[in-house]
Length: 447
Image (tube, rainbow, N blue to C red; front, side, top):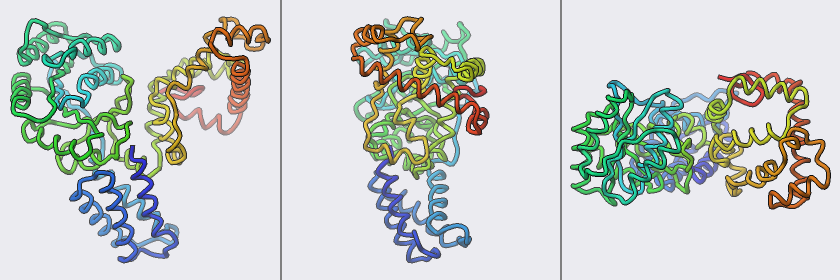
C-alpha cells in the first residue's frame, strides 16, 4: 500500500534538494508534483488541492534553520499535514452500555463478516472483553455458516436463528441472549448489497433504530478507491455512523480512500484490515500511517505486534538459554511461529525504516517458512534439543520425511548455527543491553 505514492513524494522533495532556502517558486514546483502524486493515488481532487494549499501556506511561513535543509522541512510539514488529513490521532471505540452493541454496515464484498470475527478477536485479546457475534445476514448463501466457522477459530460464540428471516428480530434476540449470558459486547454482522439501494438502507437503519448501538462501523474495501469514499458518504448521510473500517489495505491499493475519507465524510477511520489472518486488524494511527507513506517505517507498530506475542516469562527463559548457548531447534521453531502470528511478512518488513522501498518489487511469500518448519518437524524431539547429533544418516532421514533434500537440511543447520552464535554474541554487547529495554522481543522483558 502507498508504495507508488511514497516514491512520487520522494521525487517531489528532491526538487528542493540543494536549495538554500524555501521560496514561492521552488515550493510551487514541489507541491505541483505532490498534488499530481496524490491524485494519481486516487485521492479526491478537492482534498489534494486543499492539502497542497495548506502545505504551501505553512512552508512559506517557516524560517529555515541553518541546521535544517529546505527539503527536510518540507517533509516535516507534509508529514504533519498527512497525519492531520487522516484524523490526527487514533480514535477508540466508545462502550457505554451493557452489553455494548457494535453494528457492522457496508456493501457485499467489503469483508464485513470476516471483519466482525477479527474485531471480536481484537476485543477479546486486547481489551479483555467478552463478545457475542450475532448473525443477521439472512440473504447471502452460507453467510451464517461463514461467521460460525470464523467464530469457532477464535473461540467466540455466535447467536443465530435459522428459523427467522427478520434481521431486526434476530438482532434484538442476540442482545437479549448477551444479557442473559453476561456478555459485555455484541457485534452484529448485517447483510450487504452489490450497490447502495433503498432496501439495504431501510434494513440497516431499522436494525440501528431497534438496537441503539454504541458504535456503528462502516466497513469498506480500500481497493475500490474513490468509489469507497462515495459509498461511505452515502451510508453516512443515511446512518450517521461512528467510524470507518478500511479492509484490504495489504492489497494492490493506491491508498486514496485512506487519505480522502476523513475529510470528505468527516468520520474517523478506526481500524484497518492488513491481511487475511484473523489477527490482521489494527487500530488506525494517522501519524504512523504518515510515517509509512513517507518511507519512515513504523517501528512503534512493529514493537507493539511483537509485544502481543511474547510474555515476560518466556523472554527470560529464552535469554537464559541463549546465554548458555542452549538455544535449540525447538526454540527456533517457536520463534518462527511467533513471527508468523505477527502478520504478513512483507507488511512487517515495511515497518522498518528504509526497508519498504528496498523490498517493493520483492515477492515475499508468507509460506516461506513452510520448508523450514517441515525440516524441523521431521526431526525427533532429541534431535531438536541436541542439534550436534545430526549426522549424515539422520539428515537423510529428515530430508526424506520433510520432502526436501540433504543440501536444504544442511543449509538450515548452518543458518541455525550462525543464528545461535549471533544471538549469543548480542547478549554480551551494547546492542544486547539496548534490546533489553525494548519490551516484547526475544530475550527482552515483557510489557
